[in-house]
Amino acid sequence: MIKKMDTPVFRIALLCVLSLITVAVALFSVTSVWPAIGASSVDTLRGILGDRAVAQVETVVFQTEDDMRAWEYNLGIIKPSPPWKVARPPRIRQQPVQISHAITATSTPAHPRVRTPRTLSPMHVSALLPVVAVRTSKSVETPSLPMVVPTFILTPRPLPTPAAPPAWSLPPIKTMDNHQSGEGQWAVYLREPIGRVIAYRAFLHPDPRRPYATAGIIAFDLKAIRLHFVLGTKEPFSRVKIQRPGRIPPQDFRCGRLIAVFNGGFKARHGHFGVMVHGVTVLPPRQGLGTVAIYKNGHVRIGMWGTEIKSTPDISVWRQNGPLVIHNGKINPHTADYAPKDWGITVKGAIAVSRSALGISKDGRTLYYVAGDYLTLPVLARTLSAVGAYQAMQLDINKYWVHFDAIGCNNGLLRTAPLFRAMKYQNDGRYLKRFWRDFFYVTPANKNGRPTGSQTVADKLRQ
Image (cartoon, rainbow, N blue to C red; front, top):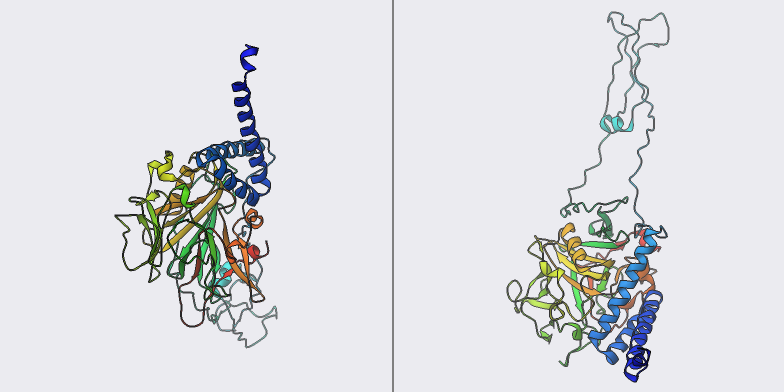
């Protein structure tokens, strides 16, 4: 038996296995510590080993990382925590308010002494808002005078003009066994300087099997913003001749105009999903696949190519990235399957990795961007369904490629505020430079007059 094992064929097989293990360990170490170097190394390996072989190695790497995270959680080394600072509800302090009262002497028969409350709770004060006019004919401190019923003359203080009800509101996030303060609650994320809210955010731990998995959700008001698409200098790759600046146009690349930027979809070789930019078809569309379309008037739609979205002259950009994850408000059961021809030659949907997605509400008013770590494709779909997406499609996956930056200004310079703290160390600001992958960016809806711009919440800008 030993002699059979000591053969050239066995030694070659053993060498291949050991090499595969070495590559997997190296990739795990590199992607965990230096995501940018890990992403570059994976691209290099694809050119040597091929997409399918590298996808298998990545599957081993991501599964190992997920197992280690579960082990740390079970030992109490890590605990689920909010991905950002959660605002606490304001405390209502019962501050006493001194109330004076007026007494008039009349011929009213004597009454027992009536004690008027000296203090009122803030709730009562907000209801009465008393400004008391004092009228007195004689001093009432003399014990010999009979006590009379006090007469209150309340002059209400003018109430502030109530704010108009919001024209845009979000449905509550469906319960997903939330265990943390602030989880599953919408909070103001981006607003215009004039005060109008243009984006909310929320977070969830959507996977009961992985309490350490976190999903962040951004909800944009499509009445207040415009979505734009930038073709990367190299990706999606095509031999079609087209300008590839790979950067945000100058008219939008300025303070008060640029609001947010986030990742696009897969590279062309991983699915050959269709792309059209300003009338030029970079890659032909594939029938039945999920597509995000940006129309010339700013309208945004997400739907199935060939039925809900078709090639029309009024579309400025469309981008495909696999089948719809949510279709007509229902989760696509195909998300539980794995077919490289549909989902691309990447890690399987059952593997927990960083994933991102784009969705839209039924009324077309709200655009959702979802991103998170340790998410399987079915969990990503359930998250999109829970927040209210009616149509949705997956965008890019893997830790380095999933990236979202809110944009603020500091002394006239654009400043990034990543959605998750870990993103700050993954080539933060990549989309403010010339970039080789495609991406989306967001601006205010108005094009003329003074730009409205946006302001991120202060705690994000300080991170």
